[in-house]
Every structure is written in C-alpha cells, then in structure tokens.
Image (tube, rainbow, N blue to C red; front, side, top):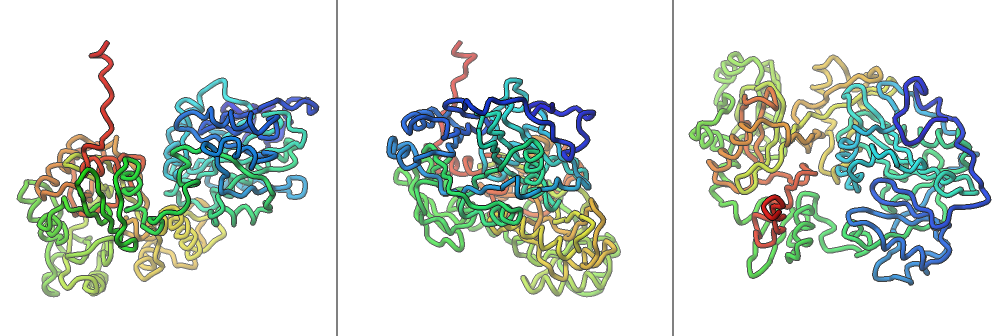
Length: 585
C-alpha cells in the first residue's frame, strides 16, 4: 500500500502512472459520524455525516481564526443557515463531478516536470503560491505533521527547467475520511504559480488526481469552484466534469467577507488601488471612490483626508513627482547623492548615436518620460535596431535617451516612509516548449495565464518587439519548441508586457537596502519603487535604472506593502506592537 500522507519512496513509485494500490478495507456499513478532515487551510466538513443542521452549524462555528472551513454534502443547507444566519452563508460556488467509471482520465506525460507528493520542505513554496493565488495558506508544520489525516493527499508539479514547484492540488478520499458508501473523493485547492511559464500545470494536476482515485476504485471526483472562475470551469468541463446540485456552506469570517457582503462600489478598480482600499476599509478608514478607471480615490479618518491615485498620494509633492517623471532629472539627483547609475545620453544626432553604440556595444533606448515600459527597447546591438527603437520611443515622448545596458538581475525595491518594505526580481516574459505547440500559440496561452493571474494587468503583446526577440534566439513564431525548452520572448521585464515578479525581500544585501533608502531621501519621495540592475542579490554592486513614483504595491504580496502604505497615511490606525515578553517576564 502506498501511504497518502508521507513522501513517497522512489523505489515504490517512479511516477503517478503507477499509483493504484487499493486503500485498506473500510466497513461501508458504518459511516463515521460528524466527520471532518483537516486540509491544512481549514477543515472539510462532510455534511452527510451530521445528524442535524444544528450540529453542522455548531461545528462550523468552531472554525479556528485564520482558517477557512468548508461544509459540503449538506442535506438541507437552507436549514443549516437558518439555524445561525448571523454566522453562516451559502457559498457562491458551483459543485462539479467527474464520473470516474465513465471517464477514463489518463495520467499526464511527465516531460520536463515531475509529479509527486508534497514534502515537508515544500511548505514555504506552496504557501507562497497559495498567497499569490489569494488562497488561505497551510498552517505551519502541516506537511511535517506525522498525525496528518491519511484521507488527504497533496500533489505537486516540480518543473525541471526552473527547479521549482509550480503547482499543487489537494485530494480528499471520502472512504478513508468517513467510510463513504458512495466511494467518492474530492479535489481542493488547485493552485498554479502565477509566475509559472510551463503550460498545462493545472490540467496535469487534475488528471493525476483523477487517475489516482480511479485506480483506487473511487467512483467520482467532486470539486467546488467559484461561479465566476470561468478559466477553471472551462478546464473542468473540458475534462468531463459536470454540474451537480450540491451546495457549500461557510462561516462568516474576514477571509470570506467578499463572498457574503455582495458587490461594492469599488469592484471596477484595478488591483493596485484595490489592495489599498481593502486595507483602509479593514481599519475603518472611509473610502470615497472618485475614478475607478484611473484608480483615483480619497481616504478619510479622524478629520484627515488624503487623495490617492493608487500608491501616489498628496504626500508626494509635485517636485518629487517631477523628479521621478523625467529620467534625466532622476539621474542628476541620484548622481548628486553619490549613487551609481548607468551611462546615459540624450539622442541628438546620428553621429552621436553611433558613437554611444560603439562605446557600449549593447544599449537601451527609452522615452525620457513614461511608465509601464512603454517605448522601451533593450539589448540593441546594431545601428538599424537602435534607429527603429528611437522612432518607436518618440511616439511616447519627443525626447529619447540611450542608456548603457547593465548586465545582471532586474530588481525592484519598494520604499515606503523611507524604509525598504519589499524587493522582487523581475524576469522578462518567457515560454516553455511542449514539443507540440508553436511559439505563437505558446505566447498566446502564457499571455492568457498572466492576464488571469494579474486581473488583466499583465499580458504579452504579440508585436514587432516580441517577434524581434524570438528571431534573435534563432526561432520564428511558427517554430515548435522541444519539450522543456525555455524561450524568453521579451527583453524588458516589465509586468505590463508579460514579465513575472519573484519576491526576494529576505535575500538582498543590507547595502542595497541602504542605497534604496538614500535614493528615496534624495528624491524626497515617501513612496517609490526603484529599478536596479544587480549582478548578485547577496552582493553590493548595483546600478539604479530609474524611479517610479507610483509603484504597483499589489505586485509584492506577501510583503506588507498595503499595510505600510496605510501606516504612512494614517499612523494612528497601526496595530499596537506586541509587548516584549522578555522584558515583562
């Protein structure tokens, strides 16, 4: 028998294709009463095992703080809610079922990745993925807990190209959980790293779990999915899942608040404004939405009002904003503060452009003013590329600058109230071949995933710049890449052109923190995002590329960017510091 709660011995299993040993004998004549399963993020309450709506409601109200319990298979969900209407609500989700007797789901071919059971040392990575997907993380130590319920299994996809876990799914065996006479199982917490470039991770996990339970004699696989998660629903329906009239009840807690309070007047704002509005409301700060499309809102508390456009506020002076808005001015201010920046020149004539290119060999062309990577071209090596880039940049600003290309990692450091709050590396958009799909199709698929993961903020444009990058790597848009081959399709790492963001706050050298804080003080700006190029995150070498007066704070979760932002605006709403237990002992 293969255990479902310990890391698998390689000698026992080479891949999921061989999972199929039957579970231990279960007495189907006696279901366990009031059965619930600890899934790490909360408990699954199997409603059919509760003898009354009152008993179910009482158990849901025992939910631990910071967890999300779920009750499914409730005979009378309306009655259970009526028992405790101030505490319970009907979840706005659909239940889908895959008939494992009728649908023979084959395990996915493991090409360039490995499907395996989650291990204790995967916990931090899985929790990062859960948080990035706005899901409840596992409680500390869940994967290393020897007493973990054997009814639960967590599968992961380990991508060989990146050497990272990029997706996970949880399965619950109802036979082991409660002695279910219907021989069922369920799927929970399907999560794929929003930064992953490998296609088909979610489908591979669903197929693997379905294959596992079918081989163990389970008759169906159920799942609960939010009614508006159209991308996930399309995947499930593609695999043969069908809607069933089964309803889910949850406890009214802060995690679930958006599910039971109904639509609000800020539903149309982008993720950069939304994260700040949500944190303000959590603290009881009044929010007045002024322009949802452009992210303008006003916050009021205790007689103080602050106007905001996303992370740009009244606290940023017009002078500080203008220093960041023009890259030439940014350079002068930071150089005067003794900070290092790449060589730069304003485009004046062809002779000067040729001399700059000859001096550096590889350069960057960008508008002197602009944001979100518009008009920026990176790694230009020939006069023709440079002149085309200059013309493209002039569509955004009459003044165009050339800049020395500094090798290294693209690092964004966010400074709030003159203290570093978050740091993340930014990587250009890339795709991973599967041996079947053209570069053009892979770009379109990856762009859809990035768009879904960032609420529409990130997508890969299929334009001349993307085609240039593909051709520079020796391919065309019609090339079919071998399985596992990684191809960068943009030179810039900007989020808005499909770039991915990876938190490295705890990895950067203290000297880089000091440089970012000095730069913020030199610009006299309280909220700012600096773009660095660094050869080594743990080293002291750097070059500051530019400063962004309106950094996207939502890109840096799980770092507390929204919390520190509201602390700056309304310091009286800060959470009281915990007492020093050593001093009070």
